[in-house]
Image (cartoon, rainbow, N blue to C red):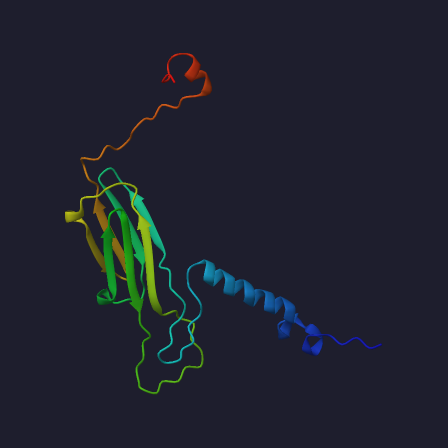
Length: 172
């Protein structure tokens, strides 16, 4: 019985090696792209969009403000919408496919495009009248000044079963 290798030319490292390893690497790249928030690859066909994009964000806090930065490379300022509803900040927008001509034929498309949305629940109330947002070099920065009237930390005593019987807790 003759053995036939699955890889052409005996699976040499010069030809890419084992096809199963190549398939595994491709699947790993696909899952990494989706889990990183890159969405599904775009098809490149006119009028079609890739999967929902998920901008990468950082949320930081100081004594006076909450700062949110979001990576939005290739997104125009006019295509970004930021809303604050109660304690939920939402960033929406669209990254459009750049087309230079009416009949531009792509060989392949790796860049993502389409609509995106990202919501963040704020850890405390902010002064809504002083919130500001700007885009510079593909990074959206939102500064939310904290509401000074809100209590920053509250200590909550923890009661155990022993506390109930010792008279320190409430009586039933």
